[in-house]
Every structure is written in structure tokens, then in C-alpha cells.
Amino acid sequence: MTDLLSLRAALAVLVPALAALAVLASGSRPNLRESWTLLAVGVELVVVASLVPDALAGRTPQFSAGTFVTGVPLAVRADALAVLFASVAAVLWGAASVYSVGYMRGLDEHDQTRFFAAFAASIAATMGVAFAANLLTLFVAYELLTVATYPLVAHAGTDEARRSGRKYARYAFAGGVAVLGGTVLVYVLAGSVSFVPGGLAALTSADPLLANAAFGLLAVGFGVKAAIVPLHGWLPDAMVAPTPVSALLHAVAVVKSGVFGIARVVLFVFGPEAVRESALRWPLAGAAAATMILMGFLALRQDKLKRVLAYSTVSQLSFIVLGLTMLTPTAVFGALFHLVTHAFMKITAFFCAGTLYVESKVEYVSRMAGIARRHPVTVGTFAVAAAGLVGLPLVGGFVSEWYLALGTLDGPVPALAAAFWAAAFVKLLFFWPIVSTAAFDSPLESRWSAPDSALSEAAPTLLGPLLFTALVAVLLGIVPTATPFFDLAEEVVAEVFGP
Image (cartoon, rainbow, N blue to C red; front, side):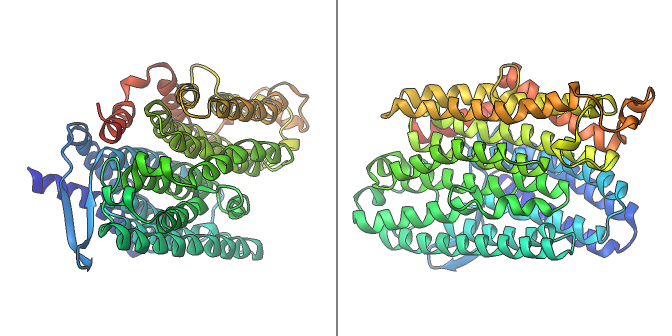
């Protein structure tokens, strides 16, 4: 049973990798290409779902495929944090794959085979990040994720897309170098880079200067993909990518891998005790709090809808980072649960933005006046996602932000809880005008107010995924304990802080 469990964790990484090869082999046959993608999605969902009961029961065997250096294996392990992240990625890969079929066909995009292959490869790397059993394995998967997502960012092939892709690569690879440097220092100080609930004991008594250097390198390295200020510059520019890629970057893979890496460092490498003594704890918390608010104000200045959502993501990711640095069980739980709720809310918002572009070629807020008359379901669903991102009740964001605020109030600096409320207020300032403009302003184009306009709302492959992710976001807000995500987040907290 133990061997089978560890092999399933490895299989979760292998399935999307094999799907990428199968898609490439499909060539220009779209039905075969998409069939391979959807088959892999189904298998991946079954594999990851089968790991949930074992993770909740504390069964976390490790599967090794060899060693990098003495004592550091290339290994995967399905603990509760790994399965939490992998479950979100698996579910949203399914939704994003169906959506991508409608999006790419609707716009008759070029190089669709390369697109779907890179999409699957990105998920394989994400699963590698999730199930990595130690820092060195995580580093390898983290770098492979950059390699796999670069073609997606630069997919359009324009000069702007190539510039954005190169900028993304520069930031991401530089972050990877920092992660490698931090990993080497941890190995020197502790003689291990394995993930241990509560952290490696040797780091609590290590030389403070070297320990702070290791923590700083890892925080900066993972902070690049987490887009913490001033490391966020690549993310808004990456919105030149197709909308399914933007959704992947923000909700499933890249930015979530960044905050996941920070969670691993704080909870499973250094641990609460060592982080509390670190001189870098409060600078990291301060950077997160500043990012939460500053990025909201930058979003207010944007007209392109995807850039608004990009700056919103930068803000929301720092909710997670600030919660982790508070090091109270409630705040850490809120941070982990926000990783889930934000994923479903943000991918819904991006799906809506992409649907408006495919169906009506609208991508600027200033051109959205009255568009709800043509796309009432899409705009209504966007409003649900926006409400959750603001933190209003009945959507998942309210629940995770509730725990984040309570946990921060119980922490050593209760005043930092005000950052959550300030950031939520700024989000209301830019999300409400978008919804109001789309729903209540006079239409800029007569075709949006045509009597039969709602009949051409969107293709099922576009509308279905956004309705599904919105329903899950609402479920997470009304009955959060009905999902395994809630239990998995609780299990992580129990592993780190004790039951």
C-alpha cells in the first residue's frame, strides 16, 4: 500500500508530462490533440483525488527516482500541503483545458498544438512543485515551470509578446538562482534540505547571519513568482499572453508556485520557531502589506481588463504571504485556504474577460458600457468573482480573509489586520465600476442591446468552465467544510503547529 501511494504521487507528475508528448505527436489533428488533453485531465483528477484520504490520515511515503548528491534524493511525497496544491491545480487544469478549446478555436489561434503541449508541460512542472519532497527537487520543478510557461507567455509571436516573454524569463530565472543559493546554504547549515513539519531543527541554532541569508534568498527567489513588490514587474506585462494562459499563470501554476514555495520555506524548512527569530520576518511582512494596498491603487489606473486583474492578483498573493508571516495557526490556515479560494475566483474572472473578448472583441473597461445586455451570464459571473475577491460574504474569499484577519489580530502586530481591510476597500473601488459600467451604463454599441443578443451569450466550452469555477467559489463561501480543501488546510496546520 505504501509503495502504491508513493507511486501515485509520481504518477501525478508523469500524467501531464506524457500528455504534453502525446499532444505534440498529434500534430495538426485538433480532435486528437484535444482528446489527449481531456483524457489526461480525467486521469490526473482520479490520481490526485485518490491521494486525499491518505494525506488526511497522515500517510506520506516518499518515492525517490535517484539522488542529486549524497543524501538529497530526487523525490516526491504526497503530504497534506502537496495534495492541497495539487488538487487545486488538477481541478482547474480540467476547467482551463475545456475553456482553452473554446477560446483557441473561437479565435482560430495559431500554433495550437504547441499551446496545448506547453499547457500540459506547465501542469507537469506544477505537480512537480507540489509533490517535491525537498528543496532541491522543488528547485528543479520550479525552473522547469519557467521553461514550460515561457512559450505560453510569448505565444502571440509579436514583438510585444517576445519582449514580455524575455522579461518574464529574466525575472523567473533570476529567482531560480536565488532559490538554488538558499538551498545550498540550508544544506550547509542543516545537513538536509528535506521538508519537515515545523522545520529543520538544526536551523533554529544555526549561525543567525547565514540562516538569515538562506531565508532571504529563498524568500526572494520564490517571491519573484509570487510577485511581491518590487519583484512584480513581469506579471502585468505577461498579460499579453492568451487569456487561458493568463488564467493558468494567476490561478493554477506560476504565481501559486511562488506562494507555495514560501509556505514550504516558512512551515517546513525553517519552521515557525526559526522564522519568529529571523531578522527578515518583519521586512517580508511589511513588503506583503505594502503590496496588498499599493497594487490595488495601480489597478485603479488600468483600462485593460486583464491588467486590472493582474494587479489584483499581485495584491491577493500578498494576502497569503502576510498570513504565513503572522505564524498563528488561524492566520496560516487562512493563508492556505486563500490559496484555494483565490484560485477559483481569479480563474473565473479571467475566463469572463476572455469570453468577452472572444464573443465581442472587448478587452478595455472603457468599452464595456452596457455589455451585460449581450452577455448577462458572463457579466453576472464576473460580478460573483469580483465580490469574492473584494471579500464579500457568500463567496470563498470572505471565508479565507476572515481567518486571515482573525489570525493577524491574534498575532504580535494586530494593527497589520488593517492591511486586509484597506486592500479590500481599494478592490471595491476598481471592481464595482467595472460591474456597474457593464450592467447599468448605456450601451456603446447598438448590437449589445439587440433583443436576441443574450441568445449568443457564448459557446458551451467557454460558458461551462466559468460557471463551474464560479459555483465552486460560491460553495467555498457557503459550505467551505464540504470540500476537501478545508480539511487539507486544517491538516497542514495540525502537522506544523500540533493538533
